[in-house]
Image (cartoon, rainbow, N blue to C red; front, side):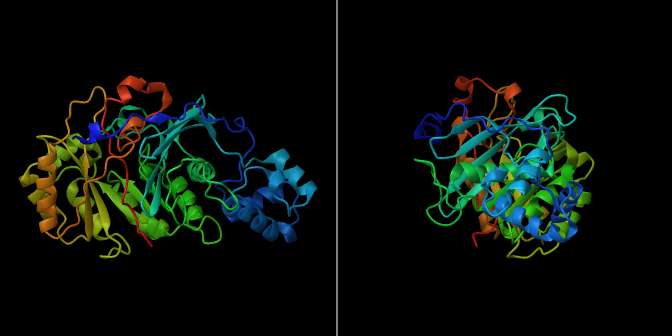
Length: 411
């Protein structure tokens, strides 16, 4: 029986209840402590109170997970009224929530225009696994990279997301999964049996994170702040197609785990599959990886490799991959290709994928083949795309997908 035959049709949730209407007020979400203090000072909060007030707000927003100032019970009423008048901590609008038969969840979220001329929509995906729950977060609306096998890359870039919008995806997911104190897990939700419902983050959604470095950095530093959301940096993975100048900065300034969308071991082929390779070829990319701060066998770089039939799946390609990564502490994730309407690529035969994986394993590299996840709701790697260009449901159900999994540490 094939993977596709073994899986049942999705159980879409339909339109989820919409959140608070899009607000023109500035959000406190995504601000650094210094920025939050400056915003409060501007609204008349005395300097001698700023540190205390910022600490209160930080705890309510990131530890307690409130999205309404009225729920901040230890904040004076006049202070709450001032906050409501001038700021927001509301979540983005949920346009749609879909739930796969395997428990994967995908949210279509709407944000205000902010220079784009109209409200914009992005997708975030939650993948429950044994012992962990991974949230795939978007960094841009659309993408500029036009990787030839990637569906997301066929949607033009509209704009970068702000730190608030990046972080709000995490807050909303924790809301919906009952992952804040005193919150209930939704009936029937598939989540880890112990610990956090969202334990790992991967920056692998829509967009190239390193083309939005400053906002991504600020959001991830807040997500890993020990007095707030307190995610371990070893449980946060940033994936890049190879923006070489920003790779060193990522290690030095953010300090999270790194994943590289590789997909080819020759420049001529990678120029086609991942066109940014024309600007930053393989030699420069691998050199940047070797110099990634903190790189060790305990902090390996993950190399993503999509399996394309008769394109990059030969044993010669496998040999080239081993040679290319020589000297780099690495894990190689093999990703069976996720078809989408209009693509000219096919997924490698399963037997060939296994031969490829066996060769990589025998050379001493971990090379897991990703478990199919979320295929029935188009929640898989390379398949995220916004509402304006979405497929009909009948088309979506026809395609096998692979979900982001096994990134970051387990402890």
